Image (cartoon, rainbow, N blue to C red; front, side, top):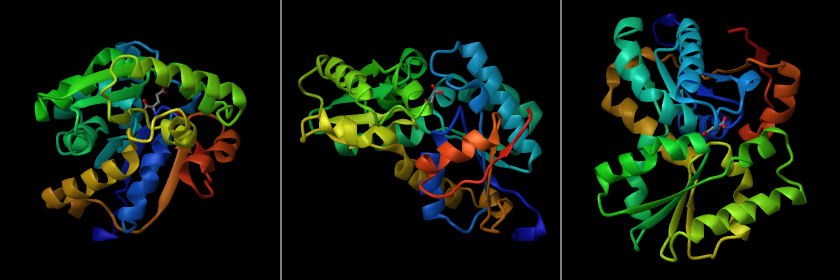
Length: 276
Ligand code: DGL
């Protein structure tokens, strides 16, 4: 651990989804300390207002700062879409000018050009992320010619959070939402899973997609982006402690969290309840 002080990299999500991202980050950079906070008590965020998502996200970011984090990743597209910019521009300068909060949308949009030949891509996400227009706005900064077709899947997160996603009933919604996205254009050749919960549905999603369409899952993309960020910001990398520990916290019952979280993290999770 550098300087002997505990300074984990913080990961935040409305619930379990961010674990699919943190898992890949740990694979890539196992030397750092990590802390995960899932706001399961108030999930899902997907259909909540801007104000609510911003308020909840800021509260959780402050908590992660209090736990010693200098760097926090919003491993949630909805929070990245609705709260990140305000936190970066309005809150951080007064709250913690040397700390940093990053999102998951930017690293995904930076590389999407490598995955499309037709320049038509699809985004499947929560209603909040779709309505925010964050994906088209960010993608057009890097790739102005790419046409972005979005579709909101409001049932997917509840199906996953309630562990109903493996049942047959889930297929109805997955099939219907994919068909509605593909109806927007026959030229779509790449689809971003713009919600960190959706990797759990990957097998079912692929079942309803033509094989020529690539599906982008964010975990590895964000892991590469974060590694690159730390290389470009050695002062931040030096602050993050390297004890190789991982701690999990949930705003809901730890017992329930521990039962479900392993599915997302791909290994046993022993989390603790945290009061905000
Ligand atoms: N994992 C969050 C995301 O990436 C889920 C949103 C929700 O809570 O509805 O958008």
